[in-house]
Amino acid sequence: MFKTRAKYHLGQVVRHRKHPFRGVVFDVDAMFSNTDAWYEAIPEESRPAKDQPYYHLLAENEQSFYVAYVSEQNLVADYSGEPVDHPDLPDLFGPFEDGHYPLHVQLN
Image (cartoon, rainbow, N blue to C red; front, side):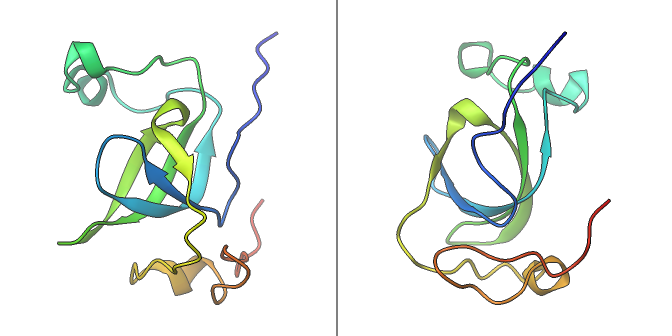
């Protein structure tokens, strides 16, 4: 039986280890659940393992806002205390408090 535990939780602010962006976790897949084309577009030397949690993020960098799909190995917790400014945050979360975003909607 496959068992995994996500390191990061919904509403948590995280940063990418290698790329200059941060975001808020809004969904977690226990293991890779995107397309093979998406996975193969990642350079082979940088391709993360599929058998780990993958996170859906409301992400931002200095130029834009977007949704990112990132492996656990490529994330670190963001303890800066700075909010994320993604425009879709109010659709899912309440106001930033104590370094994270509380869920604003009920999930199944």
